[in-house]
Figure (cartoon, rainbow, N blue to C red):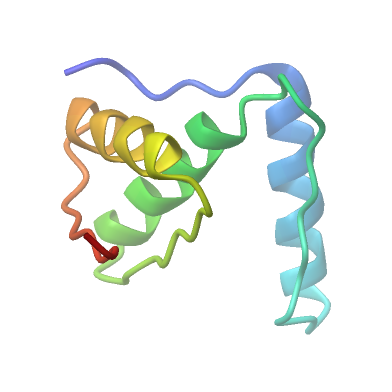
Length: 86
């Protein structure tokens, strides 16, 4: 199993989300550009939630993205389930 280590810009994003939660904002939208490692960051958040006994919902609109996501979740030992048509 690989180690989940965020890049510096991903750490900055994580810290900004945590700051919003700290000041009481519970509905925080975190937007990232292409190539920023969104899938990896989603796995990081899901792993952190799992370690705290919580769950995460990850939604995507393409079958290939679902496959890539569950490959990454499996790689990092995150429990997951998949719901999709077909």
